[in-house]
Amino acid sequence: MSNSFNISDKPEIAANLVQILSNASALATIQITGLPDIATAILSVKNDTGPVRNDVTSIHDVLLPDIKGDTGPVRNDVTAIHDTMLPSVKTDTGAIRNDVTDIKSDAAAIRLKTDELPQNVRGVLTKGRVLTDSGTFEDVVNVTGHGKLHQVSFNPLNLADTAEVKITIDGTVLTIDHTGDAAQQMICFYCDSALDAVIFLGKQVHAITDPNRYINLDFAVSLLIQVRRSAGTTDNVRCAAIYSLDTF
Image 1 (cartoon, rainbow, N blue to C red):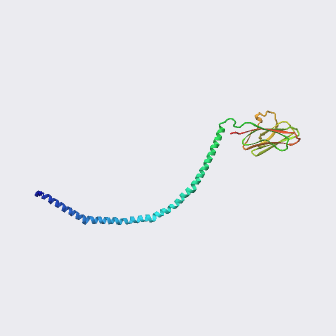
Image 2 (spheres, one colour):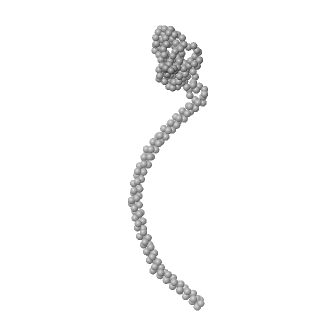
C-alpha cells in the first residue's frame, strides 16, 4: 500500500491536537472540581434521608399501631350494627309490612262499602217485638255497633198490669213503667228548661210513621231494649222497637 500521507494534512492534525488538549483540560477540571462537588451533593442527599427514615420508622412503629388500635372500637361498632341493629331493623320492617297489609285490607273493605253509597248508608229499618207475661226482663232488641233508635212502644194487655221497659244505650240505662192503660204507649224524649232529658209517656194518637213521634237517638256501641210485666195479673205485655244499624 502506498503512503497517502500528505503534508497538506498537517494543519488539521495540529487543530485536532489542540482540541484534544482542550478536552483533556476540561476532563481534568471535571475530575478535580465537578466530581468532588457531585460527591458532596450525594453525601448531602444521603444525610437528608436520615430524617425521612426517622419519619418512616415513626409511621411504621408508632402511628400504624395507634391507627390499628383505633379501628378496634370501629370494628365493635360495625359488629353491633351487623349483629344487633340490622336484625332489629329487619324485624321492624317485617312488622311494618304486616301493618301495611292490614291497612290495604281495611282500605279494600272500605272501598267495597263506599262503592254502595249512598244506598243503605243508615241501613234498613229493623223491628224487634216481644210478647211476654214474665216478671223477668226479656230482650226486645240486643245489638252491638253504631246506629239509631227510631221508635219504642209498649202496652200491658190488662188494665191492672204494670209494664216496665228498660232501654240501655251505650251502657246508660233508662227505665220506664206504666200501669192501668191498655192503649199502646209511645216513649218519647225531649228537653225543657228544668231538665236536660225527660222521658214521658203519651197515648199514641198518630201513626208510627209520623216522624214527630220518632226518637232518633244515636248509639255508638250497643243498644239493649228489655220489657217485663213487673206487677199485676198474668196477662201479657208487649213491646216493639224500630232501629237501624249504620252500614258504612
